Length: 193
Image (cartoon, rainbow, N blue to C red; front, side, top):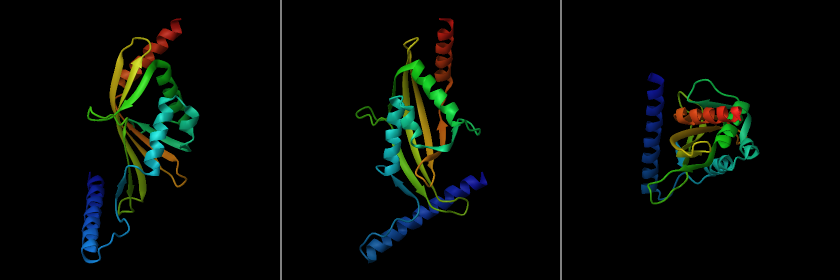
């Protein structure tokens, strides 16, 4: 708990100081200074790369997905143990073999954005190195080819970037129970045919 709270407190203090410094600078000098501290963006290169990455997923384009992953990608799917790139690809292929269509949705009902995507640049701090994280939130919607039932699964995925502009780590946070049960049922049905 101590390290976690200390990091958030440190980041909050840095952000407050940044806001205060910008206000004072704008008040006395009348111009914008270079960004300092935590920076959150929505229409930047990395956020847009993740939107394209998700489109590759929806199109079942494994080569497109692999083009953004580092060769030593680590994926933590609701676990502190990572799965390999090969294990991830097998799971994604099983999803597409089991479900059609697969969509992502995010919105207030009036407009569906597909997914919420934002990129945060965290500066060096007392407990962390500088890091860039792209965060995503969406509802994963998938209809089973076997039963016709639709699963609506709220999801959050965080992507960490390496120096080469590739995804080095992914953290998946969602309940996979219904999804995995449907995949297992489809695989069992296929095995009996």
